[in-house]
Image (tube, rainbow, N blue to C red; front, side, top):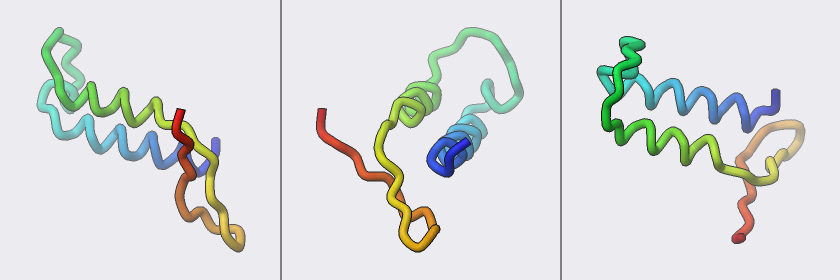
Length: 63
């Protein structure tokens, strides 16, 4: 798994902790603005920027 994917998973897991329903694992249907943000984070695509073997961010292209 790439550094970008690991960071995205970390961000998504932290976001899920912001919603009481998602944090407790409650599968009950609810309107969750945090879930919408999580989907957007997961959909981010770009080229990892690595300098001297260190991850520095992601280069995004306009589509």
